[in-house]
Image (cartoon, rainbow, N blue to C red; front, side, top):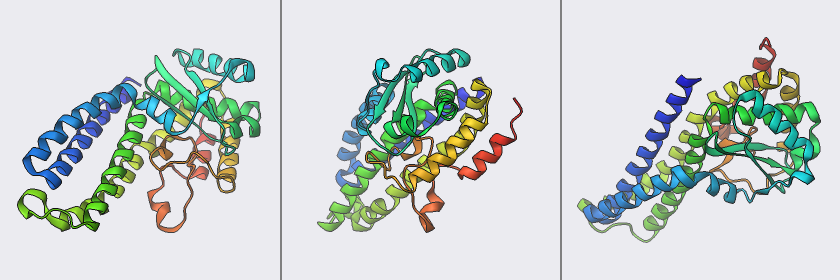
Length: 286
């Protein structure tokens, strides 16, 4: 567990470094050396903001509200019991009004963590299934996945914004100075590569960590069937009920991919196949 925490810390610094490199490249593309210096200062400020406030930004992006204890006493009891089993502080609970059943965890460490559930999750799942999902999210907190996931969500948003800027610059002629600004071809490359980079960032941190959170969470509640059943229900529902607060920048954080697409989009899925996750759960010996 300690080795995984150290690896996630390393990945976090690599992501922040990548964000800085992208910002500096953008500055050079549009403003030469002066633009590079300005973007370097901005990127340092964004790195600080990402570490301390990325979770608040993610909660705001998904329009989540605090879950009142009197409205969901059983949920609070489950979270408290699972947190005790995981040996971490009890996270804050939030809820969104989305009817698609889903959930995610965010925060910078176990002492400053939150679990967000959708209204559909609370309405659709039975007690064992809900416990399995909550245990999965608490496993992300225990495994220290949440900071890198929150920063990646913020980075994906920034990269998308950079791509939009580059596209507008290409429309209006880009830079007139090939040496200073990189030219129209550089702008077009940036506009093409940036969205792909955002997807690759999300893929890199999501697929393997979902398997590990599934296994860790199942051990917290000593049950694999609840989560297995929940994952099947979530996949079925996600194909029929849209997530109103869906955002490609935060899709990788949810327990089940809230955005669906076939063909080429399946190559960029941020989650392992549900059937594969269920099969791995069935192999766990508690």
